Amino acid sequence: MSRMTNQTYPIGSSRGVCARTGRELAPGERIVAILLETDGDGFERIDIAEEAWDDAATPAGTFAYWRATVPEPRKKQGPVLEKGDLLELFESLEEADQPAQIALRFVISLLLMRKRALQYEGREERDGQTITRYRRARSEPDEPLVEVVDPGLDAATFETMAAELEALTAEAEGPDA
Image (tube, rainbow, N blue to C red; front, top):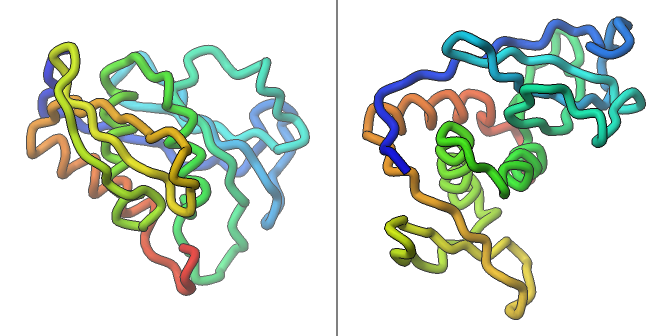
């Protein structure tokens, strides 16, 4: 796999409308947020109401998706991605084979380790790649470890991706953020 260079991955914001039904999404409603790869240098975000979501009909060009809740208006907004949402996004990228997806999964794994959702278990070289192994929080000792490929991000790319994810997962009040 080639090393990634200094790239940014702009992500659009929610439009507040279900992409399948065209209906306005209500505060507190559960949705599936989807990042679609664009022809340009970024992603388009679309939201689908949970009741209109069908795993078998994932839109073409889907890069990643996660479940979320439409925020209440004019309230102090917590993180866009709660720890559970971040875990779901991480899990959805388990079979990733595209360099940008592998890089995103790698950066998310470090954030999850910082949030104590993953515990570092070690690194190894395998088939010319560096593999980092983690144990899920509260997992049984005999459960298999999670393996994450280190994509060899340069420092600038890593910092950019980490800062963008940090903004999405800014600590909210309470222990489960």
